[in-house]
Picture 1: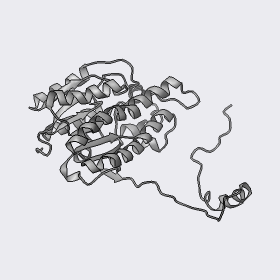
Picture 2: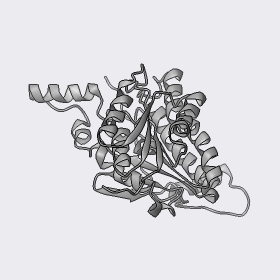
Picture 3: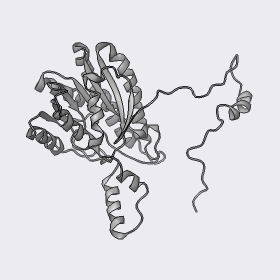
Picture 4: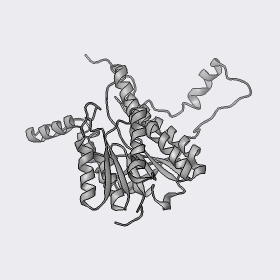
Length: 309
C-alpha cells in the first residue's frame, strides 16, 4: 500500500458493510481520513444500528488510520448535510465523496407498493443528491474534488426491480450532469456498476436456501450458482479508489463496469438506426416502414407466455 491519498478526506456512505467497508479500508490504507456513514439498517432499509459504522472505524484505527462514524440517513436532506458537515467539523476539509448507500425492496411492478417505490428512490437517487449538493458547495470553493457514484447493471433492466433499476439508471444521468456542472471547478464525477456478491445480491434468504439445498442435496435456487460465484466486495474497490487519485483527474462523466478481473468503460447511448423523410411521418408510413428498418432484428426480451394452468 502507499500514500496516494495521504491527507485527503473521504466520505463514504453505506460504509458499514460490503463494498463500502472494503472501499473504506483501501482508502485508509492509502492515507485518507474517513467519515464512515452507515444508518445500520437491514437490506430493505428498515431499522438502524450504530455497530456497523463503529466496527469499521475501529478496524481503521487499529491499522493506524483516522476515521469517524456517522449514522445519518442519506434519504433526507438533513442527513446528507450532516454527513458532509461532519467531514468539515472533524477534519477541516473534504476531497472525495463516495455515494454507495443502498437498499432493496424487490417486487414485480404490478405488486410493488408506492412505499416500496419511494424508499428505494429516496435512498439511492435522493441519497446521491442529498450528499452531492453540499459536497459540491465545498468543492466549488476549493476548486477540487472527486465524486464516485455507485450504480448497478440492474439499471439496464432487471426483472422485479423497477424501483431499484429506475434509481440506479437515474444515477447515471445524474453523474453525467454533475460532471458537466462541476468540471470547470476541477471536480470529477464518475459512476461504477459493481458486479459483486454483497448482502443485496446474496441476501440472507438466498444464503439460507443455498445452504439448505447443499445439506439436502437438492437443486440450487434459481440464479444461486451465478450469484454465489460473483467476485467479492474487496475486488470492486481498487478502481473506485483509483478514480479518486490525481492520475484519474481527466476521467469525468464516465460509467464503468467492475467485476473482479474485468473493468469496462461503458459507451454513451447513440442512435443505432435512423429513418428520415422530409416532413413528419404518418402512422400509415410507420406501419409500413418500421418493421423492416428500426425494428429489424429486434428481439423481445420478455415475449408473451401462455397462462399457467
